[in-house]
Length: 420
Image 1 (tube, rainbow, N blue to C red):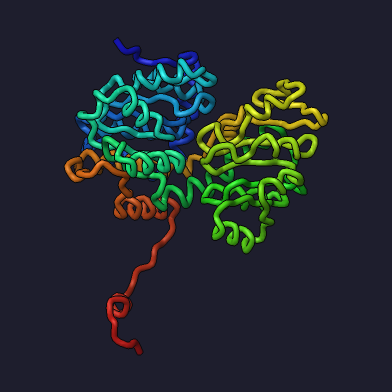
Image 2: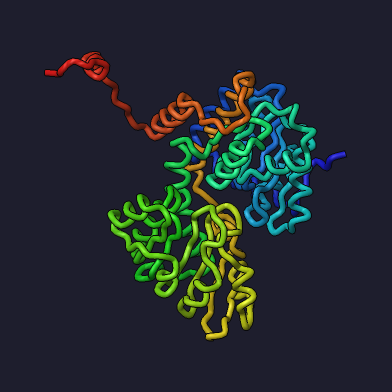
């Protein structure tokens, strides 16, 4: 029989409950959806397996899905991102939760499979690990599945590649790609939480430092803006010509990683790709350079090459490791190359996750009500009506007005004759 939960210490639950209450104060959109869900029970009969960062904001989403009538099970989407007190609080409230900060790969996949044992009708992923496990080892679950959701750039890239190859066996909604997610969560959330993680881990002053942002997508743009706001001299590394030009016109230096390696004080990767900082780049870095990653998987820094080059290695502080190279230069790696914003800090602010998780909740409702519409096994966009609903609810929560077109303006916009 499946264990009801795997957490570090259930006695941590009281602090976790306080943390979740704090998040709820700052997530008015999701709470308004929960209130409706409690009355309507649109998720009744649904079994939702979620592989997400186990944070206080995620707990608010889990409570909302259960309020809607769903059976919910949650596991961690990263070995270092779990907030143990939050996992304990969920377990104490009767949730099936499987997450311990610092777990090894064996326990990680044991937890993931425990979540899948509920035989889900809907999956919610952060990095596509659930979907990958279903396709590789748990294909017996596919007949039960209506659709899934994915909320990371990295995961969506994986899933689109699977769909293109004809390997995707059930439909998935790309929550990551909807504006109320990527324009706020990726841009503002990643910016603040990543810088928070770097500062918490090192207590370094960013002002005056050369801060290298590798990747200038939504996450990179926000991170560059945040570092610039704290007085850093920002360098951007890009492979896309349009994005590189945008970084230049935004006022940042643009270089190759080979050139940036020689001048950077702090490096952060946000590309979703593999080995963007490699051995030759570590070797070229200044003494004391700080290197970290804020992309989903721990593949962006080639730490195997760094480890092979080292003369010595030691842990200076929790999740702060010093590698000494043959030239006696020291390279400081944060969070073992994993998500620095969740391993060394608390992740995105609740106000940002309010929108992202409202998207998840409403997409779950959409899947439950419109399961028959997912005819093709591919990656679907979030319905525009959901995005608009979340944005309007967020404006209302902040007391902000939204203007409307006049009848004359509507007529003009819909006409093709010359205006006067």
